[in-house]
Picture 1 (cartoon, rainbow, N blue to C red):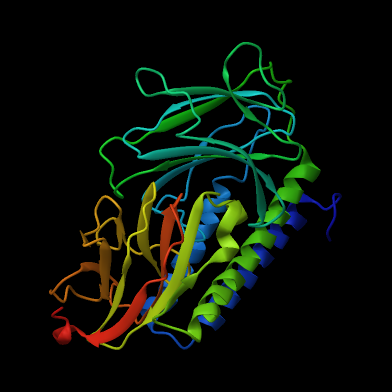
Picture 2: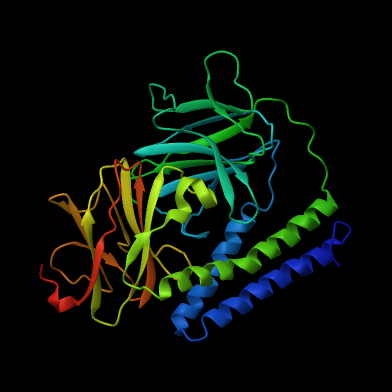
Length: 361
């Protein structure tokens, strides 16, 4: 039984049906892979569920900026060099946002209009160039449809905007000083309602529906790379804030497919920009183990020689020149480069596959 009158039990079973469908898809997608990749697929599914459960209950009248895409809740190309917070807000609401970027090299606050699933339109935004920072480095602004009285910093909340993202860009995955942020309503919120059974049932069904499509996104991403492995290309689909991305970033994307002993060399010129990074992902769009392995580099940590970078993707450090990025021994994976506010066109790097023993220059 579906619809607003379905019982919580019916909705719960529909949620379980969605999870069961997702599990069957993962089993089918990984049937030809080894046991480690099969387990990794179900770990990614569990992380996606943890991610969605973390935002299952929201209070738009009293919103919270919730940490998003931590290592236990990875979903759809997390980025460990960033720190994210997300709040669901009421259309037309008025809020105060305060925070501090820590040692982040860039911070942005963006209002999005969600369109269902991972589709979104970026609306208004403030960033390091337009935010007003206090003497201690903190920020304090109003998020509202109309400009507040006085000279307070203001982020317009466009019609239809219902999600607020705060991002801090860090030079490493393990910053010395992490930032923080909070949100509070400017107007006294109405009394909190008692549990609304139809609304609760709707959220259960929506959770199951969302989880049932997660593996299809993974499958499409892997299929898009299958025909042209060991190459990179422009990822124009992510420009302008699509899929809740940062509007000012240009993306390059590709994949590796390597036999034992092979390495992928990625070389290109550095384009002047505010910040850039490179990051490795598995086929399930989870970043690799950045807590224990070197799977990313940033403009602050990469080796740049004569204005050029060189990344060597391999299961073990092959020595020679270039920055080694650890593939964890995975024969296949996805690599993404991000360029924030580039000054000119970002050049697609060259790639070549060599044996590790041949990597001398």
